[in-house]
Length: 249
Length: 249
DNA sequence: GAGTGGTCTAGACCACTCC
DNA sequence: GAGTGGTCTAGACCACTCT
Image 1 (cartoon, each protein chain N blue to C red):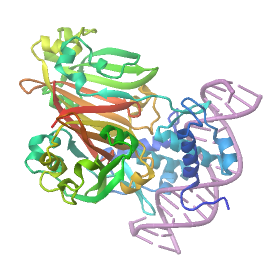
Image 2: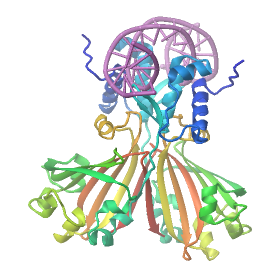
Image 3: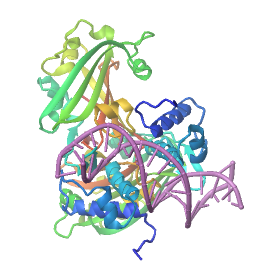
Image 4: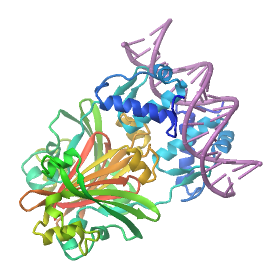
């Protein structure tokens, strides 16, 4: 009599909550009813109400805080202008490539890994030889207290060891400007975009649950000779970003 | 004594299965043990084994077939060369823009929607006026019997009504070549890439479960005057694609 | 301490496929 | 008909937050 055709109960409950969120009854940051009130309200078992809440969590609409409740997500996506940010004029002018993204308080945690053995596919692209010896640097980007992007940049060790590229601070224009100083200006880029489940480590560093997918971007930078001089492997909170690519026909 | 530190049981079972898949013990298309054998093997409740299998499903590593079992996914991602496929030389030569993607048996189901009211954000970009009157066409792309991409293309109704663009078959070079014939050649494109939970309809048309995220691409085509002449809203099976963007610094 | 989400158990019915 | 995945129930313990 409670009226059930085909759509499972937990989906109908999720639908109802989603509608309320869309209608603004629950605004960004608001707390949703917990599983017990929900279950009572809809006359189902607690597990079923929980399934509904988890469905919304997996959609990225709400986030769970242990011991506290489910809260409506309140993060405005970052618009990443993937091509403009890498234009020569941009880093050539001394701007960091991050400043082509949304203007928002941005914290970057950077650390040098120094000489590392690059993962096999990257070693091949960079033509690192048998040792696979690369120079690597990792970064974590935090916007509004939320870690949103992890990045690991690999360059041929021989190319950059002992140069300003291998310093902690790469100076105005960043790595690409320093590579240009060395006569290895990047002239071409390729970005490969994939969606995947995060590794346990990535999930932890981005503070995501294991069910939330991430965007993987692998960017390769080429110098004029056609040689690959850098590979940057990035992991993005998939709900925190909109990727924008502008190009001519 | 069975050795449990912190990682939940269901995750450890999922990890074990993932390792076996990576090791090739279960190859593409193979069937995994069901929840009951799995539960017995690991000494847990059936629900817990099921949780492990569902975790793998959400990762996209395996797919569930109702009444049959869980099977290792066996689809090789499609490499979509987003920029090359839209170059003027490409469609100018009479090739369809799909042929810049992986060479694989591709089926396209196309249908004209005719005159439709475009969604508000698209109507604004296309400057459709109050009526929001657009001409629309939808397509579904199927590769190896798997629907992988949905597309809906919107153009200003006044621009294309009664022209070859509005025909069922757009001819060599497709819509963009016909727009060029009309003196509205696209010279610039913008693609916006997002990851989201699919609508119920999109999930059904792509044969995805509601937990599997999709990639949303919104592509806007601009003519030389800077006017937007087409908006194409695409929904991709996020595990079926690798997006590739090539560009110069 | 009360409430919460994360995990887990031990059952159940249904619709589906055929291992 | 046996087995399967999808859904559902009615409990439970733990770690966590503090509504």
